[in-house]
Image (tube, rainbow, N blue to C red; front, top):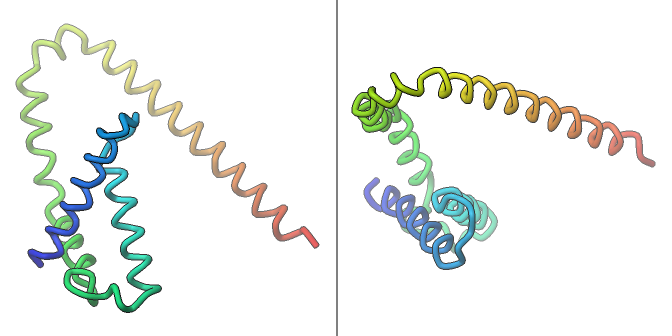
Length: 128
């Protein structure tokens, strides 16, 4: 379990280093997650890689343990919000408006993406 958690954190660290070294405009943990995905896919394809924390379901079990306690990771964010109540009181309406607009835009983009993917899949089925 410790080795699997270490592998997850190592992938996150590698992603952060990669993003900062290349000055990419994306979060390092996202790149780390992609790296972990590549490692897991390679493990399933090449059995020689299924050693250490990659063997059996080590990473999967460690990630289930993290997900079981995911709510604890929101505590620091909640504390940060409480510490900035004066800003929320001052700019509360603007924050609510921005959040509402971003939710609507996100939903519209999601619908457009699904419609586009549906059309592509329909074309793929009808192609000779």
